[in-house]
Image (tube, rainbow, N blue to C red; front, side, top):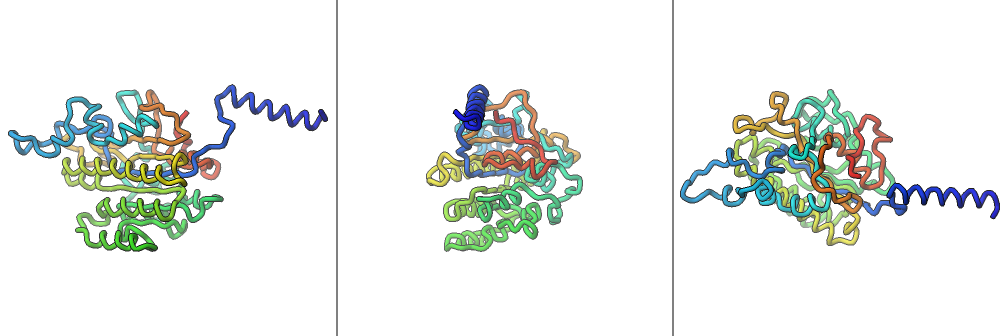
Length: 363
């Protein structure tokens, strides 16, 4: 064997030996797509423990009301499965979940403000920026991982976002990024199909309950239609009713919004798995932008004066994510979502954004 060929052969042999010793698979990652879903202001208390008895107000002692029948069970495990069955029956078994204090796990936001825009900016840009300190519609000064991925080879024009908040275009700085962002006004930007237009009409026909925050249903439908017809490689969906009903003090509707959020996550995951472009090639990331108060007196609120709102939860499932279930004795931050979403599809966000937190420790 000639010296040059011998050197090349030995190099390949060394790489193969290292891969075998470390357990690193020699084949490239099978994950080609990522779906990110956030549920605004969902408390970790309900996610990990189910409905809170102190907040379930029984209006009829003879016959428990609907929220009690639907969501109350005798154990935390049964209660959380009743509230968010897909997250617990599928995601927690086939993927990983971060933030359960009973497992010594902490997931938290690092911005110190504990409300929405700073939380979303931290999650999507990878770090807390003190310039992002309000919910005002000011363009995010930092590129998000969505904007960055949209500029990478193979992703251009295949990154879409839908959110139940009219601040979403500012968070994504659409004037700079050029990302299509449906924010409920209308849900589908640039409708291309009859179904797109029907979804926008439906949104116009629904009552405007909150200023700047539409109901989740049109957002869910817009995202599902986008998946079916435009086949994005990166899809971000922001659901908002958990936060809105929380602020209203409607614990029954807050629980229902969490249940419907779980139902949507199941539907979009199952829709993806039924499509050749996505089946076995898609990762799922679920997170929240901030928590809420921990007592019956302050559960409706969040922000700097509500320390419990610092704590969040995060979950990941996909073909490259080992099924480790509830992660124990690990601390993670919201900012790790950005690099994680990129890493799942084989891209290095930290190389472009050195301030961004590293990916979640999935291995």
